Image (cartoon, rainbow, N blue to C red; front, side, top):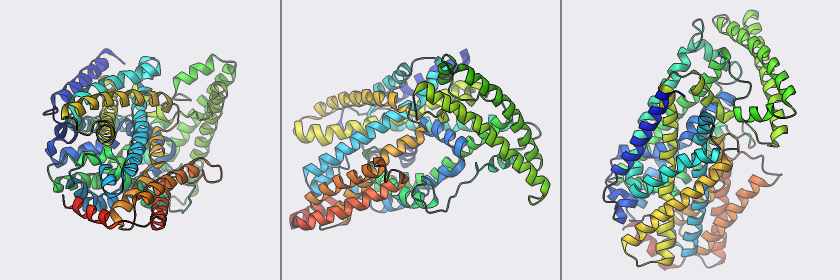
Length: 579
């Protein structure tokens, strides 16, 4: 990066942190710190909800995912619109009118304290892990740009995020998210423009996408019903529906967002905004990944996108083998470029003609040859580093940014990615602190303390969770495709959490014993499907459905065996919903 890029990064991040601190008003009161005094407009809440998902993981992981596997990941979001409509009609008015600070407060009123505490512990565990992954994504980029140790880059992101989240509370988080969304969208638009204008003059955008489609990069829908496939239309509509219901309806990081809205109507509008905007937005980011694939068909990219591992290999006994593969890669790349041009020029021909078929088959073979060389290089990296999970998918988009974007835009893109991580992780840290304070500190340790005591403890909790997330980030940076990692983390817990809220809100016969047992058995079942050899091939989106069904079934059975729901709990639920 050049001096102008560094200046853009420094100025932008300074402005974001200052703006976050300045946006905090009345944060010396508990309601202002945790719920913004229910004063935020629906559009700001909606953008904040979307910004939590449009993190640096999305920009780095999703584009890399699309480069490697195409548009299939968009199916992950197919259940989202229906989930948002369901939640807007049910859970949003329910929680908003209840007066709670966390979703888990209701579980004690409906069931008992042990169910509330278990649900809160589960939230803290999975959200703490996810927050670490959110920080890891831009840390990878900075480690490449600066040549720093990954620990230093993680701290460079985590420390300022912890600072303004501690001071500003949910108001600082929300208004920072609004600014972050605007800048990220502008930066991504600029990146797409560079990708398009970087294509050869004789290759149109349509032709480039056509070439990418010849090797499956534009395939967005998979109608097969295969539980072992992560992304199909069925896993997205069913598994994605349950994941979205749990994430937006039971996860404190999202519940807290719509509790800050001015009214129930505003809270509903904030969720519906995601329902109708998220899929097109996500499709656009995936298209950027596909365009990156098309761009690198005509513009040289390294054999492997991770320069750190490349240097490690070149310093090892396998250096000669790696150099030989690089020579093969240069030849195969040149052949693939020629084949890609031939297929692009043949696009206007009858697709049933021998000429078109020959051009298409030639490119498919050339792509397979390049992939084979890359696979051999990856094998060498795994052998040298003893890392069986190695993948360079997270380095694809950063390589394009640093190698091909013009001066100034490089800095803006890097700043946008870092800021996206800061905004997303600040929301997570604020929710983690809220649950820690309200569900544990106030409930079990200091139930009658003043607001000042809770606010003071929340700042310590924010710092503690920030340190934990930074530790997780160091591990997560080596786990593979980050966009999959964060969703796999969540899918371990989301289904069972949704199940316990279905028992609480949707049934009358469930009791605390049943809810507690259902939650535990649901979690155990999902962990078994994830880690036992016989079932670990089941796609992770299905884990959300499995966890919810098991939790509800076991909860109802145990409730029936332990006497059902006493009448006083039913009346308590009625009183709670009218609050």
